[in-house]
Length: 280
Image 1 (cartoon, one colour):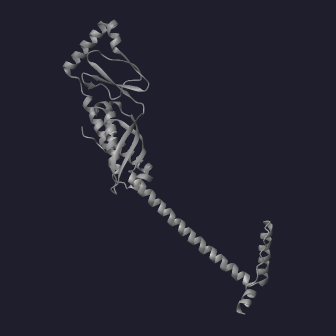
Image 2 (tube, helix red, strand yellow; image 1 turned 135 degrees about the vertical axis):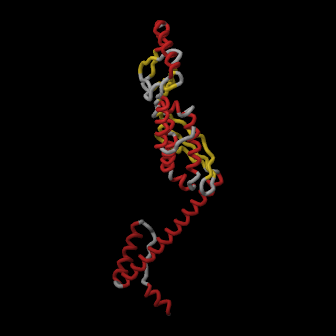
């Protein structure tokens, strides 16, 4: 059966299925059903164990009568009856199912090979469609999840794969949900678990990051030196306007040295005095 990706086409596919199965059983079919029902009533003490079926709260039963689906609405939960020999049924589990996507070797848009795995959560939303429209809904969803993972990541760059996992998960969920709508499957959540890079690429990215950090450190150091030099220049201009301020700075320096309990005391001399002796 061809997979319908458009939700409207998926809904139309399910509607056509119900309309085809809503036809009569035919003359021979009704004769067989009546005969089977007659013998079931006649042999009631024996057939009661065959006719009564029970499905649990999280299960539904899709009944086939002579190969035809009897009703669009599945049976359950609870007890229901089937006619021996003419009726058969398939149990469908409505609980959310999760499975791991095996690691996939994917070539990204910028020609980098990575290994990516994930997990998918889905449930059956339409038991009739999950039985009649696909032979094995669980297995088909697993295969489709693998191909969807490769197709979606094949359009992404390595940086996008590493940083935009949430966006990739949402894109995969939408794609899977549209593709499995005609199967009666609802994909609730998709998560990217791990992205494994080759060892050589990891070393190259580590070296690139280290070089980038060193370059930023040098730029920051240069900016700090520039700011410090500007501050010193402004301080020298302020001190040059007030000679007494320079003397106060000398005294403050002496106080700082004496507070450390040093045995050596340094007396700063004004530069104009030293320059006078140098000229001589």
